[in-house]
Length: 446
Image 1 (tube, rainbow, N blue to C red):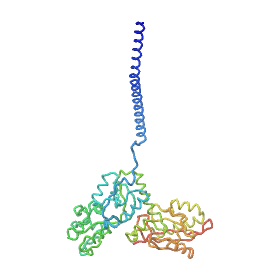
Image 2: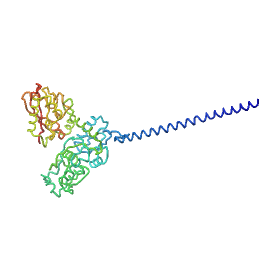
Image 3: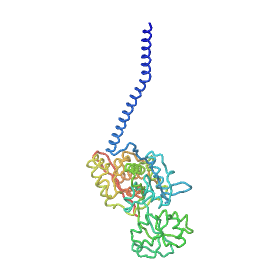
């Protein structure tokens, strides 16, 4: 009896020990297995990430790369009326309004309210040094060509030398400027006029530099400088605001015409430059229900139409019309296709203001070598920016007289801005049996 009890106790002890091992050992084993699994998973994931990074590096991309948008840029300008200036605490002007219109075309959230206004020197140097920055309005030149990336042109402006009427200052050539050793010409530092004068070999010591135009006008008033080199329109605007006698000044010499652009920091991605240029082209070329583009309305709001300093010869215009008319008579469909492709001779590669366009007798645009957005649109009763129904007059004149000309106000694709244009036209019978009005023109010379 006693021996059986001892054996029973031994078995019970072994069972209890086994239970304890199971209770304590299994979780430890499971925990070790789990840790091993997690470590292996992390190693696998890490290797995958390294492989992905290596693959991305090979393809020139990164895991965190994000495409820039117009909203990511910082925009800087100066007061340079009528292109950009502050009036009644609001930034306005041709370049400002055009930029806003471009933002709308790109569905951007940013607007001209986000533009920062500096003196020219600070804005210019900021955009040279800092990524994701833009400056306007800036003249594009050979000296600046590789310093920025460019979107434009917006408009053209004229740089001049201004002096007092009673100063007796007479300048008729660059040689006059170079030889006037004692002449003191005020310029805004880093402005295009400064560069233009230096390129004319005007002595560096003849240039009196300031960071803003207001200081120069005050110096001119006080006789501390003899003349002022600056853009004609903004100079006249500020002289009226700052000078004690704005009527005492006159333009004594023209330094030349220059195109205004938006200048982007050189590291701005090309795809973003392309987006801005496409948006600007649309602002210029898309016509509204009245037949006028947003660009034309903006420019006309701030500035008067101009005459051109140079234009295409009337002989070239007539030659283009006659050639196009002959080709339409021979093969209408092919000629329209070539015109709409914008190829020579229908759109000149040397004279950007020379191109051909064709209406049918219902005033629908059948072909246009410079603006594809106008093709297929009916322009009956649609006007230029002044309200003239010039398209009606062109087609009606062709039907009545066979050929003729019409004057109106239109954008100049070579420079931007609004100019007085004369379009010559000719009625022709196409190979398809329909009648068409072939048109080409040039811009009125000053």
